[in-house]
Image (cartoon, rainbow, N blue to C red; front, side):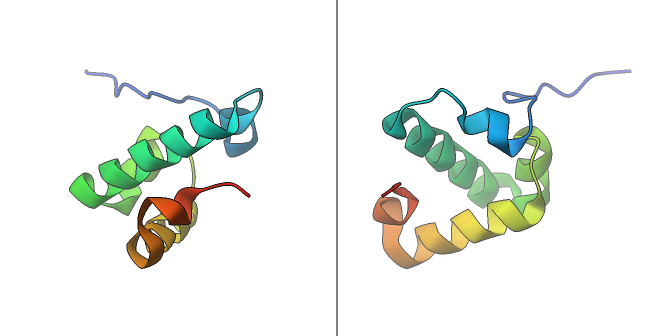
Length: 72
């Protein structure tokens, strides 16, 4: 039985905790690129978050590119 590797095995709050703005944006870009390649549900499993969260960030990315992933 194989185990799925998870890059971020934490909840969404912990995913961003103690990260710089640039690190958070890099994580989001990685997640969006993963979702565009494999789908929202696999990305949600991989990043241990909800599909709705992935959909929200993918939508922002599609509407505004990398600027849509920026934290203000």
